[in-house]
Image (cartoon, rainbow, N blue to C red; front, side, top):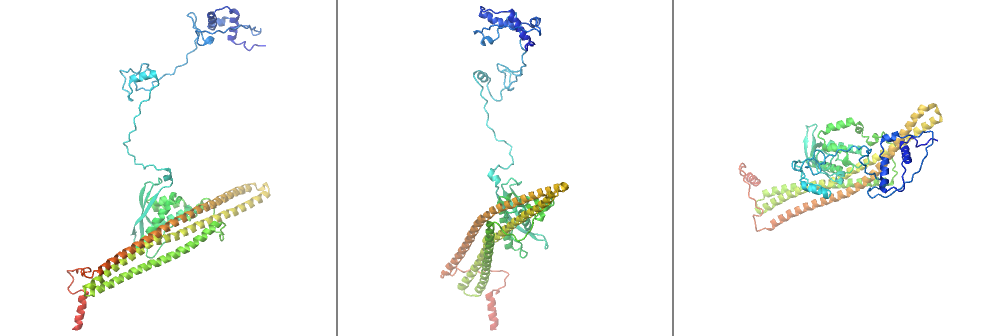
Length: 580
């Protein structure tokens, strides 16, 4: 059997050395330490000249006793290497390559232990930019780790940036809008005349280019925004604009009422958590070339012009179906409530219009009464009577102005809220109709799926003869199932969204009507206080009977007016003519 250690030259060397150099037990410790070093420092020529046993003859192994002793001079004990003598030539292993050590900071002057060729003496080196003394550096290096240099405080940058200050996450998620609609003025010729409004916006939203900007819009632009937001957000109650009016649309009272309604519509739309992020609202508020941008958008997305909305984006047909029967009791109760509320608000608006008309009629009657009193005061000869009559005539003119102003305030404070919520109920009903269309689309997709499955079952019964047709029908069934799933999810999401929208509608209705009633009562109280003050002043003047100059007013002399042209003079002239 061949020895596995036969090819080892070291093994053969150790056997030969062990057989030729025996070690006695009486050897001194110094000799025992020198023997391993002598055997370990044999030259290669001696190893190669030694005879090597044959591979065919078995090798005889002789065990030699080993004696371990503690060595005081060598810290590693018997495993440490002895100091080579001058006559020995040890085989030192090759030295590994040393990594070049570079100075960590080239700006520092050289120290006592220079590292690399770039270090310089303290006398000729540049000054340290960190202002560290060389003596402290050298002293600290021996005692312990060197302390880091002091860091100067950051100075404000002289360059001023024009960026907007950062806002919190809550403010970024819910930006604020303040929109004002003003400066209504008439533009165009006789056939194309219309009113243009200035829409000024202040916002904290980062989606807009500037925090404050202004654009020009007309009424049909507001109407486009309302219809587009309804199509983009099915189930959301979009604040509506005021209704059209063909007759008297350029009257000052109507223009002011429409301006206030449009401003309230935009502020409510921008305050809505869903509508404020709509891209079309941004286009309406910010675009300078609004008509061109709208036409470009309609060419880019033609389905929006057909008012199909989100249902058409999924490839779901919007069907009309038969009469819709509400399956959810909650929606049924809300629909009945909205119908009743709409009828009550319409009745309240009719009564409001009657009251406003009565105020205007009283103002007109006060004006006629004032004119009659003034005519009587000019005829009366006695100043003690003509003075009070003329003062009462002036008081009636003040009463007429108060009635006119109060009638206008009633329309702008309380009447506009009633009209707004009548339109909002119409917007809620439009959301109900969108949910109804989604229900029809869902059931239409289900019926289409049943037809596809019936065709699939028919082909499966025919076997593999219609394999190509079967693959096509399978793809159609999968597509129909996808449409059914999307239509069902859209209907359910629309229902959850409408529940939240109706709750929001109720909260805003309570706040708006409470604020409107308070403003209505405050304006009525202020008007009555003004009238009471005027009447009290007039009564105080009547009580001063002894002072004849209370109601006296010096006559106004007109240079171009001929003498005897007053009403009294004309009456006296007629009397003189009759007597002649």
